[in-house]
Image (cartoon, rainbow, N blue to C red):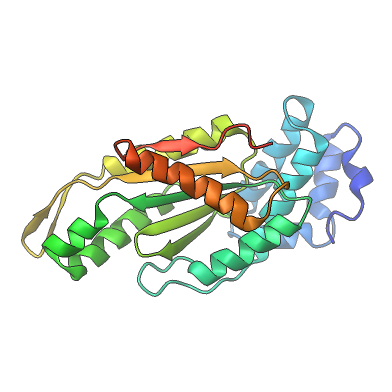
Length: 239
C-alpha cells in the first residue's frame, strides 16, 4: 500500500520529504477526495510531520497518516434520520482499523442525557429533532476525515486520528460544552429544555480486540452517566 516503503519515515523529515510523501502514488488523491481544499489536507499532514521533531515517533506518525487515509477511503452506509454513518458502517471501519497494526486512533462514545424523557414528554417527532440538532452541532467541530456514526438510539461514536490523551480530552470537552451551550429550543410550540451529553473515550493500543476496547470505552461513558452526566471520562493508561 501507500506505506510499503517504511524506510521513508526513518530519517529526519525535510520540506522535500514532505513534498515526496504528498506526491507518492495514491496519497495525494486519497487525501484530496476528503475535501476540495488541497491546502487544508496538506496542512494536516504537515502538522503531523512537524511533530516528528518534537513529541511524535515515526511509528505514531505513520499510524496517524494511515488512519487518515483509511478513513478517507471508506464510503459507508448512512443513518436515514441524521445523515451520518450508521452502526454497520461503524462496525466495519473500526474492525479494519483494529486489525491494521499501523493505525493510530481514538474512539469517542457519547449519548444524549435523558433522551427517553424527550420522547416520553414531548413525543418522538421532537426526539428526532433533538437527535438531528445534536448531530449537527457535533459536525461543526469535526475535521474532514473524522468518522462520525449513530450507533443506535441516542448513542453515537466517533473515530478520530488522535494519539495523545490531552488532545482527546480537549476534543471531548469542546463538543460537550458546545452541546450544552445550544440551550433550549422550541418544537411545535413546546419549550424544550437544554440538551447535554455524556462521553467516554480512549486511545487504541493494539493489544486487545475491538469488543474489549469498545466495552472499556463504553464503561467510561456509563461512569459519567452514573455520577451526574454532562461530562466526559478518558480511558487512562491504555498502553
